[in-house]
Image (cartoon, rainbow, N blue to C red; front, side, top):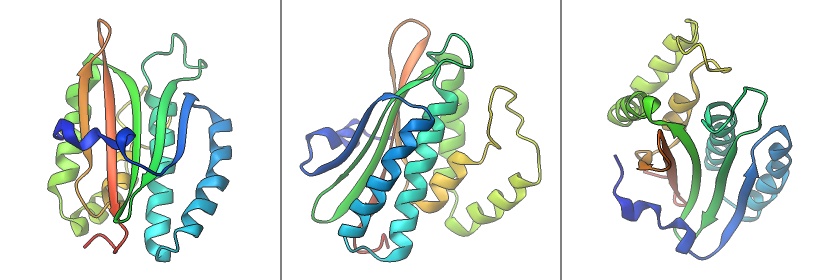
Length: 181
């Protein structure tokens, strides 16, 4: 689990995108703005692609797994953020998850953070061959693997108890502008 000080992104200057709304298909409209912001940063193409991919996966994570939906057709609420400073780009998401899912998410992210990138690529290819065991998920179950694979550092995350039965799930990926060595 991440240290709480990892999540001070809102206090950092130069927040480029903050999406605090219902996360639905229309949220993807902000992706063209994201693309132009990343272009203006003049980052290496591979780094731009990684940041863009992680942002999309975080949108999908909030869209498909937010717990505050009474029925599957309700749009989930979440916060998506892209910020930067002179050394790094920060991508963060925040959404509510049921407490019953915290352990599973924690285990998955812990596993992803412990793998080296080469192992993650193999694991990703392996998981693509199988059906997602999570019947509640609309996706293939590859999003967290993709996020971990694209980030060159560990994925910071945290769970804070919220209202009864739910926790606030925060995930943050930091990309060094120098290429994440």
